[in-house]
Length: 136
Image 1 (cartoon, rainbow, N blue to C red):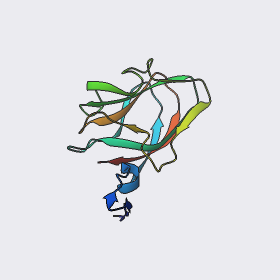
Image 2: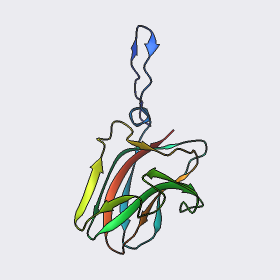
Image 3: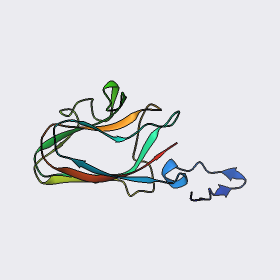
Image 4: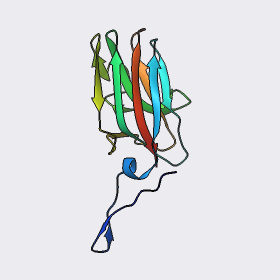
């Protein structure tokens, strides 16, 4: 693992962001069907923090960004961004996408611990991207 120093001022330690203190994992995103896909598996007693994410869709696609249990967020589903369905998530037109975060700080987090991080896609077409994440 990587060791990171947390600065202190006048003897008081600064509370550092998880994306600054925990070694990150990098996961590609590649979805070609209208489905729910687990992108990040859960870790016992830990939340998942998204440090950076980008996605590009070749076709019009609504993307639910959710957490839940059951391997593909099928139970206890909650929205991480937007609602709990593709229609109530991020809505992309054909050949568009988005990028969130520079990687140094957490941009999104699951509300629960020990939950999957999933994407729900509405369209059967290429959705590609990448996510940098940590669990703490």
